[in-house]
Image (cartoon, rainbow, N blue to C red; front, top):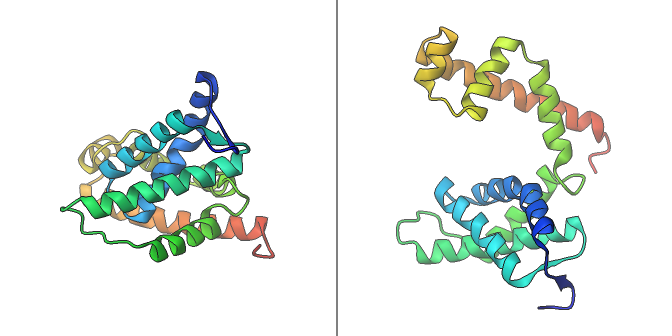
Length: 182
């Protein structure tokens, strides 16, 4: 085990998984992994933690975990014959820089998540319900249509509009919180 890494006890490991799992999944998807491969990459990343420990400090841990996930994604691309994704180190380095610039402004991505939470709260209740059914409850378009008294095409159009509204809202909130763009 390298000098800057230490093993974790069970509670520390559970805390790390809870804190980093969703972000690692989003990162793997951002790199181009399909949902199944992203889940495997996240799982294998945490297996590496069990085997080798982690560095000290939350931001160092997050960066280290992304590095492992990036390498696992590269291996997946090289070994998966079905994978249409091809990637090299340069492309992944650029993806890491873009990820850090867009999602980790404050080092942990919390500002982005908090902006999303506030934007969701600003939506009318019926529109927020459509989002919740889609993403939290993982309902199909047909189920959402039935629950909300809409057509499937109406759900599709509503989701497209809501994503656009949320993207603008999030960008504005982030710009207000960070007016210098730093």
